[in-house]
Length: 111
Image 1 (cartoon, rainbow, N blue to C red):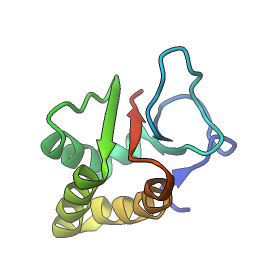
Image 2: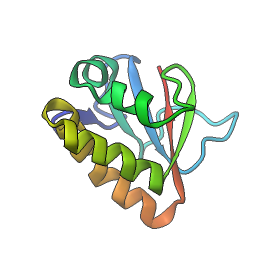
Image 3: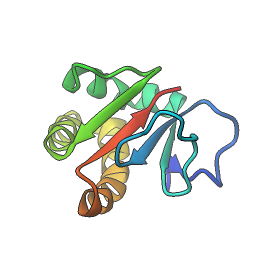
């Protein structure tokens, strides 16, 4: 992976965690099957702006649940924008496709 990392590869805590399924209050962060995206990459690539534009409830500091339809909208916006946002979205999409095989949603846990 070029833009994202796993919990075992992270350095520090300034990451947005893409977690399979719904996040339950009281659950711990940094699940072993989560995908992590550093805040600097999220912002500089433009992917963060796409999340804000396509998800009305998106909170970069909180919990945001994303369903398949919403993810498809995010992905299409990123592909249309191109550049870093597209590259990040394509990398997240590999994980998201796997996630949606077993879960109706994934959750973004903000920084």
